[in-house]
Amino acid sequence: MKRIRRHPRAFTLIEALAAIVVMCIVLPVLLEGFTISGRVASVTRQTADATLVAQSTLDDLVSTGNWKFGSSPNNVTVGPTTYNIDVQTNTWENELDVNEVIVTVHWTNHGAREVALTTVVYAPTDSSGNVVNPGALP
Image 1 (cartoon, one colour):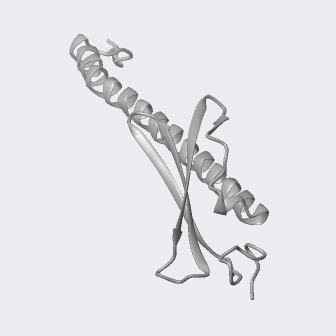
Image 2 (tube, rainbow, N blue to C red):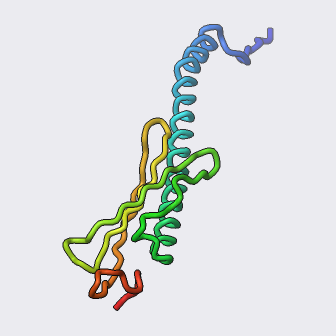
Image 3 (spheres, rainbow, N blue to C red):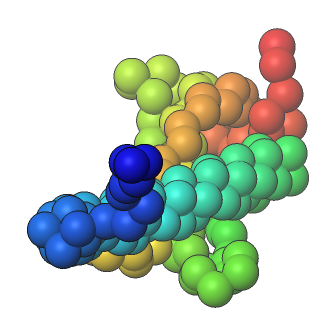
């Protein structure tokens, strides 16, 4: 007589249940990982946009000489995010003709966030204390 060999071609019930249990444990962890990576990507994109807004504002203020007035747009919208801009000018390390210009950009994404860029501007003054040719190098 010929013996018939059986080759298992399907999963047993225990193997199927074990696979379902493993998937029930692994799937929520994977989904949470995707959620976290999406948030990180969003914050990174917004930080890059805020840095570009701050750099553009700082360049504009220095090139036009408006840094001495602290004038800048109050807010800028890039995509779905609105960035609030603050400009601050200080005397730099007690030097009369050197000023520090700080541009800070604030926005909200899962909490308050901000980016600040700083530069120094040489602004020689005349005898009456008026700025002469702001932003020019000696």
